[in-house]
Image (cartoon, rainbow, N blue to C red):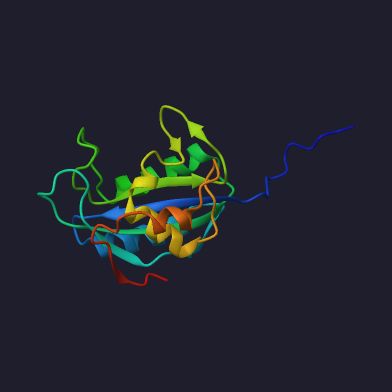
Length: 174
């Protein structure tokens, strides 16, 4: 029996990506990030939420955020996808600082990757704070209301039970 290792893996994974910005024309930053994400090799954006205004987490002496969530069909492994997203952040001028909740030009987070649970030095999936963040749950429920998180929690149910904290739809992105 021979095995041909040259075949490309054609199984597409589904990753959900959170997008956020509150500096340097946030709406434009997110729109440019969508274009860049659409160019990631072996990946296709399948759904995009509306664009939302949200209050900043942590220090309140910074501008409000714009947030969205997208579904990405990809052949990339989780860390390869993370590398591609971080390259897009860097190209946008993202500066990584000690303050985890500080203002930023662009923030791209892998929220979910199939039903995988990943706990590595570089990547934690499901994203560690997604169940407490209205600016993640409400856009995620908009594009994937029947989604169930690893562990069995319904995104729709979580979104119904979270305080919207002033979250407002700004516009459609699609």
